Image (cartoon, rainbow, N blue to C red):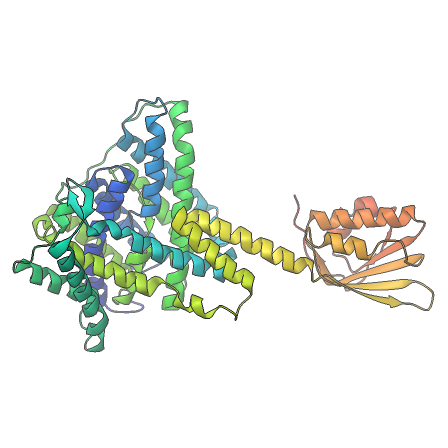
Length: 514
């Protein structure tokens, strides 16, 4: 069912090695996101395990990595801040588990009702802005790792030799990742870099390690029913955050899936991914996980390390759990610098550097959309940025389309006039349509031919009704040709005001209704 053991692209060795690389990169990310949300580090690690495992086996995009994410952590952090001033007496962690489970149920419904298809409405400039903003967010997320960590909290900036050692190790990691593939691809360069830098530090270099953030040691996660009072007041408080978590997760996951589709030249299943993400978050809610979604940084690490199948995601999730249960003392000694270097290379690979080549070559409106989406992604969150980008692109399209409604007049021998209409007639173009066809200055009989036009919405139908009324009041006759059957049916109020001609070659399409 899950095609776990069917290799379509890549090979077993690449999947296993890339999965191990991803697992190592997941550790500091999961811990850091748990801190952002105000939760214990293990809740982030449990989320990375369950979400990674469920989506790898049942999701719609083989090779894509999911886990605890910053976008979800920020929403949970805001919920925690509001909870402090709400007067509700409930444990924050328990409320998080219930909220994440509710968000998962919403995501399952999104997939069941096949709403994932709407990702196709995201224009390319929005995609570029999303990727660029995400690269900047990943970069900014590494800044705190250049500080001194004590008790799970960042303190002052590293200084002197400590900062110098950190920078040298980060540079060494990036150099290995860049140059190793030029000599051999037998081992993923990211994994090799982590091993080499860790070995160098083991010989006495003094630098911060994973243990300085928080130990990854823990017990196997057991089923846990969220311990919260059942009340409508608490449900009303949690529901808005659950909806936001669900939408953030779906949008980020589908956008990441679309990016991976382009890189691998394959196509994922958006609705299946929504259901899998929902099932994963439901599982997190009952196993003390903080929830999450697809992770573009780790997904790119996986893809560029050779991971193409579901096996890579399964290996990453299982290896992460093994780190928590069995290998915590070893993983705790991995230098932070090595993981920062890996993420810096992800930033370089994620950012769309071709953006700078678009200046002067694409419409200024597209450049503005890219800039706005990038800015909102960095300033607020990914979901809001995508929504803003799509709305802005739609407004740009509407403005441009409104200027492309064309009317071609032709005077007939009998004194009447025929107008051939071309373009889309919708809310943005009806004003120009009405003004150019005003009864004043027109002959007693006017015919409008819609063969090369399309009536798109309720606003355009109302504009036609209003125009017919104006012609009647002016003592003139208006004829309409080549309207679709639904248009003719919906123009009921014009039946006594104009003549609607029926032709054998009338187009057939539906009209968007309110």
